[in-house]
Amino acid sequence: MSVDIGIIGLAKSGRTTTFNALTGSKADIGGLAPHIGIAKVPEPRLKVLVDLLHPKRVVPAEVRYVDMGASVKDLAKDKVIGGQSLAQLSNVDALINVVRAFTDESIPHIEGSLDVDRDIATIDLELAFSDLAILEKRLEKIELSLKGAKQLERQGLLHEQEMLTRVKAKLENEVPIRELKLTTDEARTIVNYQFLTAKPLLIVVNIGEEQLPQAASLEAELNSHYSRPKCRLIALCSKLEMELAQLDNSAAEGFRAEFGISELGLDRTIKLSYELLGLISFFTIVSAEVKAWSIQNGTSALRAAGKIHSDMERGFIRAEVISYDDLVRCGSLSEARKRGVLRLEGKNYIVQDGDIITFLFNV
Ligand SMILES: Nc1nc2c(ncn2[C@@H]2O[C@H](COP(=O)(O)OP(=O)(O)OP(=O)(O)O)[C@@H](O)[C@H]2O)c(=O)[nH]1
Ligand SMILES: [Mg+2]
View 1 (cartoon, helix red, strand yellow):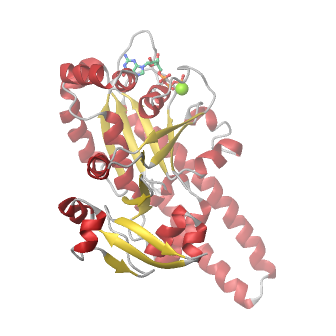
View 2 (tube, rainbow, N blue to C red):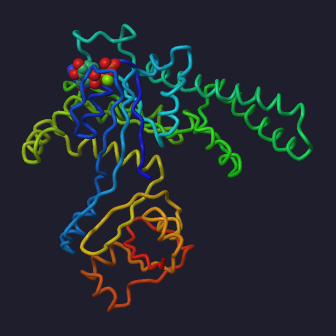
View 3 (cartoon, rainbow, N blue to C red):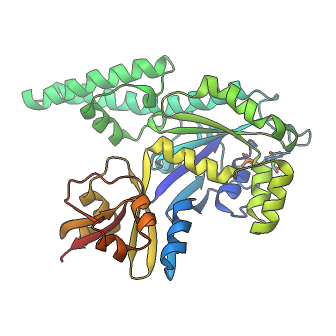
């Protein structure tokens, strides 16, 4: 299971450019076909582990980005997003909305003028429309089923009807599902519908090169409105980021210094997406291979093992765990073992960010 992030937005907002920047791809700008690309999750601790352990192979965790091709407005032909596009979007773990802030006379803005707030609201509305359509369909079905339902089934249906009606009222008042306070049971039901406004949202404000000196202040100003539950905003120049992604390391370094970019937009974007998704990293070191994995914060050792291989989950015996800091302090796993710093943990152990884990299992 990789992490999937869908890139959406209005036409000519810079979605494909952002996709290319994030994945180092060279997808055809202006093309309408969906693009799928993979980015390696930047993980500075991985480099330290490599320097320490000299593995033969190092495998970073990955994120998959999907550039939907057509704009959200074009996907939503009959007011709502449907068919294959909806299926594709429903499957992602988080959304990136690329909003145009760059000016370019030769590329007319699709809405006639530049207005970041308006464009953010437009996309929010499109996503809400899609969710409302799904809600309405489900509510109609529940209504029908209630007619012939037996007592037990009836209770479940009434329960769901009550909750979905509540969610619908909120959506109609422009409150996205990601902001609702739900009980664990309710959240579990909601997850099954894969609502678009339930997904964490990262707003990428795509600024022009000439706006770069103001990027930080613009970002802070916009974030004061848009940093809401499971929603964050970042300002970056996708065009420049794309060009940077296509340079080799030393050339990119010079370029970044020239434009005063301290951290790559790609790295920040992935980091923010991870924060939004509540993801943490753990590492495995197996026969000269150091590998990083992403899991939801709060995952048990048993489930973490299952992420690597289902056999590991089925045959789980225990996990040998050391924190990243402890390993760095000891210098090697064998030294850590000698000093008794390695812990043996059971299947219910909650994996911590930076844990280095060896799973013991039998098949
Ligand atoms: N000046 C400037 N142009 C940009 C920037 N980002 C994107 N563009 C240009 O804007 C045009 C549209 O960019 P795309 O990345 O294709 O945008 P899109 O949202 O994928 O567009 P469509 O898929 O065609 O709807 C391209 O000509 C880009 O080169 C930017 O930061 N500055
Ligand atoms: Mg495009």
